Every structure is written in C-alpha cells, then in structure tokens.
Image (cartoon, rainbow, N blue to C red):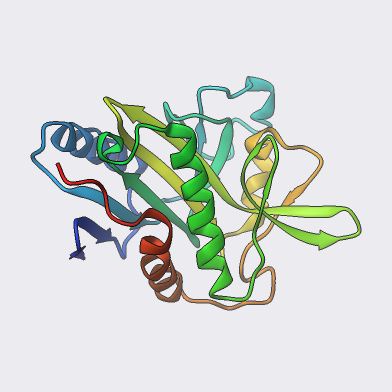
Length: 218
C-alpha cells in the first residue's frame, strides 16, 4: 500500500519483505531522491527472522552464527534482530532540506518513537551514549523496545528504526543486541499491550509531523 501525506510517500507492506529486497529498494530510492526524481519516503514493513550487522559490529557479539541469516547492513550500530512482529520504518529523507545534521536526525527518530509509544501510554526514554529507546522496568532494570540505525548518502538518509510490537523475544538470544549485555529487550505485548500493527502504523503516521514537520522548499 502506498499513500502520500504532504511531501512524504508512505509505503506499508503487509507481507514479510526479504532484507535484500528492502536494501535494494532503499539504494534505488535514495539515488532517486538525490537526483530530485522521487519524494522523501517512509516504508513500514516486517522482515523474516534475521540479524543485521552495523559498521561497529563486534564478531564476538554474534553468539549463534547458525540461528538466523546474518546481513551486513552498512548502517551505523552493531548487531540487531529483525523479524515478524517487529515494525520496521525505513526513513529516506533529504537532509539538504532539513539542516544537514545527522545527529539531529537520529534524535528526531528517537523522539518519533517516543511520541508513538506515548499514544499507548508507554514512557519511552533515551539513554546518554546509547542510541535507541528504553523502558524503565524498575529495580535497575531497563529494556530496549526500539532500535535505531542510520546511513546517509549525499545527505539523504536510509535505514531507520525498529519497534518491538509482538516479536519472539527469544530470537534475540543469538546476539548481544546493539552491544548491550547487561540489559534486556521488551515489546508492546511483553508490557501487557496487545496492540495491532495497524494501530502502531497509525501512531507513527499521526506523530510524524510533530517531530519532523515539513522540509524546506527545494
């Protein structure tokens, strides 16, 4: 499904999308955005179970090499898991029209996830020095509910965020997620919220403008 909201093209895939197919689409779309031939794009999807390695991935953090396929993502960050029940948002934005500030873009992605979680009365939080979104479980325990990994080419972004809706959390056992060994991962269903993927998509779309607004005119 494809629709446009203002200057953003929103793509929503109901079927699982192979990682290499998604990567190929992003490569092509980024080139088109650079050349002014396509609009900025946000693609909401799910992948089959897999691990991706960012540019800072430590091979020692791949605990089980045989559990799922492993892909070199080319984004920032370390190892992470993608799979059914996890909403991926691949965000392809033209930072030439948004301030040319990669750090600000990452913080905007974090703010977007936090705002969307707020629609379900979940208090997502940032942590200094650790990219992503966390939920304080009390007694010193904090679990990660959203991961962020970004790549930028000619000031156009790709890759983006993953938000745990109802994935199999045991699938994280094959890696040290994002290099964090002393804390866990959680999901909306794990927090007692049986939220549908459609409801998550609505929250992401409804909170987009609050965080990202409109780009400068070309």
